[in-house]
Amino acid sequence: MAGKESSLWKMCLVLTVISIAAAAGLAAVYEVTKKPIEESQNRKRAEAINKVLPGFAGTTETVKVMPPTGKDSVTLNMAYADGQLFGAAVETYTDKGFGGAFTLMVGFDSEGKILGTEVLSASETPGLGDKINADKSDFSKQFAGKNPAEFQLKVKKDGGDVDAITAATISSRAYCDAVDRAYQSFMKAKEESHE
Amino acid sequence: MSKLQILTKGIIKENPSLILVLGMCPTLGVTTSAINGLGMGVATTFVLLLSNIMISLVKGVIPDKVRIPSFIVIIATFVSIVDLLVQGFVPALAESLGLFIPLIVVNCIVLGRAEAFASKNGIFDSMLDGLGMGLGFTLSLFIIGACRELLGSGAIFGHKFIAGDGILIFVLAPGAFFVLGFVMALVRHLQNRKK
Image (cartoon, rainbow over all chains, first blue to last red; front, side, top):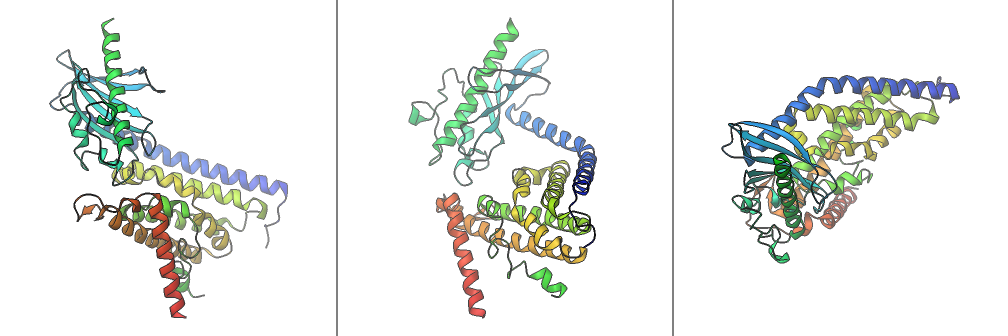
């Protein structure tokens, strides 16, 4: 067939042209979808903040804090109502999940009491670990109203106060790990803002 | 081969996952529920269709020695485009499929059809082939996903009809192999009987 012989020049030329066309196509699609993707991510975050800080109406301010444990920084949305610290919605993570890392949003009041928790993204096993989602079981609801200062964020098997999901102890432990990381980061952020 | 045969051969006779045994990673990995199987199948069909069309269009100018890298660049570009479009315009779908879309790049069905069919046939035939193969892949993923969801979590499309858990091993990795093996054996048996 004509044009099928593989001379060096031709190979380089064809691959270059294909790559340039691919890059141009991708760049165009990226430009078109950049805004909708950003908007949907912001909306998702705002929804999660509303869920974990019930009754909050005010402004949020984003700060990043390095937690005492863990490899990566944690993003805190410090919530202020009428110039007073209302609490914070903390985007926390754990890498101890059964299906790898997962991320949570945890809401605290200004004292550090947990107001609510919400799964942002997780890939836990369907039917077992995915019961960390509020619509699959009541596991995540037991945290609301507890203050980690007196509520041990560990599953009962490890001597803590948290009821683990049956047959999904690893996911339950990871959830506690993430909530605890959120609490530690919030306490650290509060301390730093007083200095 | 008639046009209709090109379209329908992928559904049973050359079903990509049950007969050709290609694309085992998504077949085993994402079929934990009927809807996951269906979603992965539809996304793959879309990429197959686009890449088959594109590759049959440019097949005349690609030198033999660089055809595989050229195909891979084309396929990867389409996968990224689909990924961005889904994230930007259908965020609800992106939430359930987000992890799987990038995985289509490593699905050997797409490269397999490019190499075995689209690089040797005209644009219309390649389109039919991509569509047929995609439908066959979707069908087998849907069947495997439905079986696993039914047995493993006692639900279909997320609607539970038993209280509590099902036979959990079917949602875990071993269940994927069990169900795939049984479905393959069944299809083989039916084919042999027809002869």
